[in-house]
Amino acid sequence: MVWMESVKFRKDRLVLDTSLFVNPAVRNDFGNTPTKAIEGFLLLAEQIPSLEFYMPSSIFKELLNFVDEDNIPGRLLRILHQKSPSRHELSCPAFLLYELIEDMRERINKGLRVAEKAVKNVSKSDEREVIQSMRKGYREALREGIIDSKEDVDLILLAKELDALLVTVDQGAIKWAEKLGIRWLLPSKFKDYLLSSIKKI
Amino acid sequence: MVWMESVKFRKDRLVLDTSLFVNPAVRNDFGNTPTKAIEGFLLLAEQIPSLEFYMPSSIFKELLNFVDEDNIPGRLLRILHQKSPSRHELSCPAFLLYELIEDMRERINKGLRVAEKAVKNVSKSDEREVIQSMRKGYREALREGIIDSKEDVDLILLAKELDALLVTVDQGAIKWAEKLGIRWLLPSKFKDYLLSSIKKI
Image (tube, rainbow over the protein chains, first blue to last red):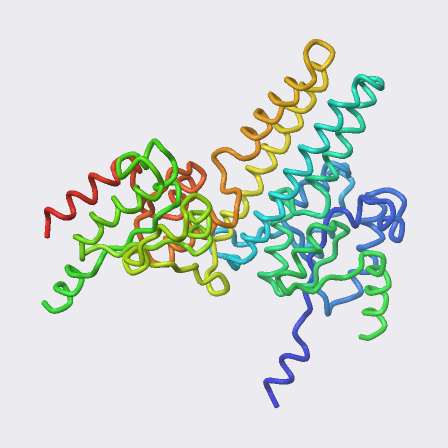
């Protein structure tokens, strides 16, 4: 059947996060600096014509904070496509709005409790230490495991738009990928995934 | 033309927030207790067959915290329809997600600065006062002028779904109404609006 053939040979798409080239736990699979990790990724990716790699432009800009632009090989831009999601055409299911707002509400309350505890602790310990520890607790309460930047939203929406496999270390993005039915890959398996894709051709 | 006739006679819909019957600044137009305000509203609304009134079920439940259920006249439920938005069918444009997340990000940073200031002030003034004033500042930073509950989302989405006129005191809901192209009415003009609708029939 013609239809089945065309499905069989459709290229699979992957949406990649900066963290893959920056976060040492994952990056080291490819190279011990961001620039080397990009090189290492490219060497594999070039051998896999069955996969298409994408990165939202905003995320790519983040990557440039870690890599000297002069050191980025031109090949990268042929292999790793920069594309923003179609922000003004896409929509998201309303139930996500409810979940986001309820989640934020709980986190806001938690953040206030962290702050109140800090105020009560000042008399007992060093002010600078109290502030340090409050910042950490506050960050955990309000930022961790949640989508908290437009770059994160780009990542999720681009994966949705392209029906792509999302590869990221960000727990907030993974949580949303699951809500939206987006496939995601354990980032620690990313190199293996690429290697096995080479063999299968 | 038949089509124009039917448009002309289509009932206009209004989505009402609890605040209209609870917030004294608006409620007093109708009565000096929530129960009397409901009665006052009913007396007018019953004379306006050209308008249909709606309230999300979650908002109606909030109203029951202020009004003794026994004192709610059965007529109210015939005039003021309880209906939740179709949460699992509706969607929202993706750009709203970006705005919400960017807005929250700024507010979260502001909340942390409020907390840090409080910690630094403890040595100078009474702990209890510092906490009180921090709570106020934190609330302003993180809650005011933003949709912060699923009831608020219900209000907005129901108005969108019904293409209704939104009547609320909540600034966060009004802000979102404007983003989504939902008509809204100055709540202080709600009684006048009803009165003028009676005259026009």
